[in-house]
Length: 183
Image 1 (cartoon, rainbow, N blue to C red):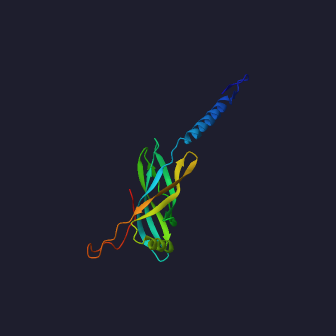
Image 2: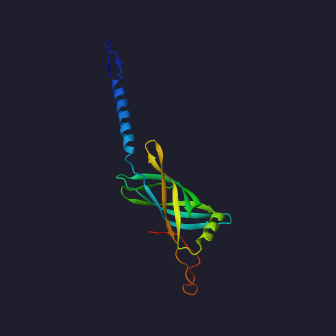
Image 3: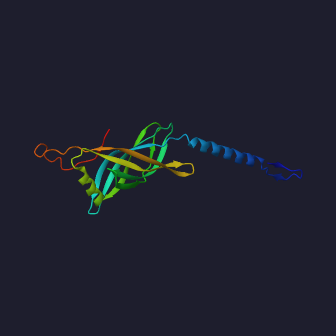
């Protein structure tokens, strides 16, 4: 900003050009540092049958999310597919927001659904097994400067099935088996 020889006030565009150059340099630096971000780790920590109908069942999954970075991660949603014994079993979504602390963990509850055919197929495949293989995969959505960023995740593991109680040994138990992730 300054005055010209006629005493009129005018704007100089040099500082604006410097501001634009600074902004571009800042964005390039920010983009370069995004490569240093390690995606969060996601694992299944618990499952629970919420409701069962004739054609579909509603599940609630507890997901444990780990942040290996030296800064908090603001997670704002999750979409997933749960495969059991190599077969698609359930799908789900969550719009729950949670901040995973730096170098820490957070738990998120996600709703999922399965259909009766998938459930029957898996129950028939149990056949005395005490463990079943699972794969949890999908996308975790993280708040970013320019909106939400999707990080893919893929976690494999095993679910332990507690053995049903023998009749007469523990009345009232053993009629329902629950999925418990192996450690």
